Length: 168
Image 1 (cartoon, one colour):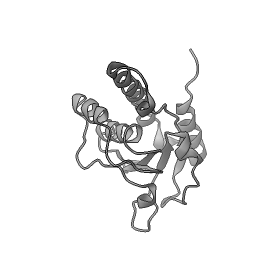
Image 2 (cartoon, rainbow, N blue to C red):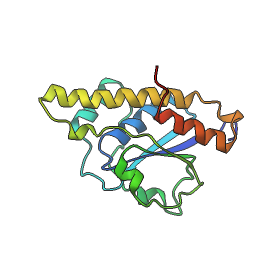
Image 3 (cartoon, rainbow, N blue to C red):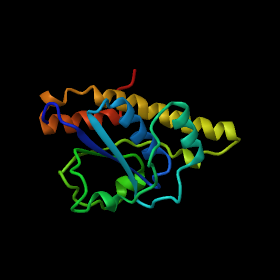
């Protein structure tokens, strides 16, 4: 990895209406111009979940121009070269994905789908908050990796380890 460059990251989920949108917004804020995040879906939703938009606004995270997109948009010849692709759902991880421009490093960062949470509104909202917190922790670790000093194989190992942090 080259020093001083901007890394392009794609987050994939089943519908691109919650997890991947949150990951994109978080990284685009905390990445401090070193990272440019995108998100997409295997089966895009019609719209972003309203709870996600509320949480992102409350956290002062960028939501301009966010909308569900299909992963094929990022496999086209004119798509940006990707440095990393993270799947956040088992559906996305199990999908036969294309050869991405840039031959990115990949990892599966499984997150529960908060859209499937049951119960009263506060319980459903808490499921979204929990996923957002999990993504914030993972991305804080990710942005602090020593990219410039790691070879491709070591970096692959590090990003996969972020998915399953060691038990205390």
